Amino acid sequence: MGGGIGSMRGSTAVIEANVCFQNFYAGIGHEGSSPVVIDNICYENIRAGIGISEGSKPVVRGNQCYRNRRAGIGIRTGAETSPVVEDNDCHHNDMAGIGCEEECTPLLRNNRCHENTLVGIGCRDNARPVIVGNHCFKNQAVGIGFDETKSSQAVVINNRVADNDKVAIGIHSGWKVRFIGNELSTSKGMPPVVMVFKDAEADFLDNTIRGSGVAGIRTEGVVRAPGN
Image (tube, rainbow, N blue to C red; front, side, top):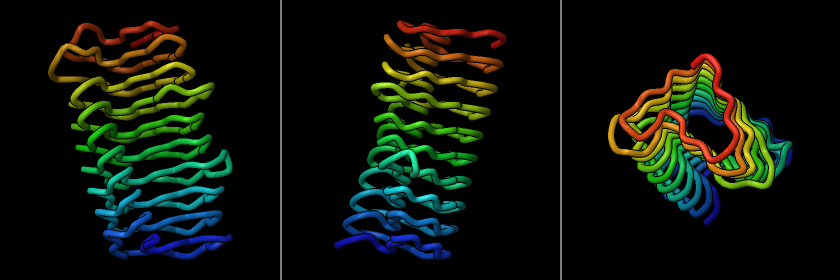
């Protein structure tokens, strides 16, 4: 009725090579802890495959998170929640491959997020992620999405975002996002590759943007785009 494995109250455990499935909460859950979480398989959990919250700072590396009802990896609750999430495979989840919310400050690096129902990497509720070197592809809505927020910012560097069903990048109001050196593309349909909505700001520097839709970058907000 809880998580498969729970790391809490300052735990610095090593959680390695476990299989956690069909739990009511996360397959592996964190509250106020900093374990090393490597090479686990987390699937068909009611919430996230791996859930990180309440000031946790784990290193989460090389895990497979799939067919969970929420995110493959879900990160939330406060700026002190600042995990390093790298080289994970997050796919076929009912929401995001990796979800960031509630002011968390994660580093997301070299993950593969694909074939999720909503978004490869999703950010909302004043999260402040650094998103580096990820591959987001074949998600049923958006590759990397920034949902409406009060005021937040993110940095997106050297990612590959391709072949998602709607846009590669969607940025809603309240965000300031800087994109550097990304490969952003779509291969079907009319939506733009990048959509920047009203009351959002984005800087694009040295990105490659290509697709079949109405525009590479379509904006209702503020965009600065040198050298793409």
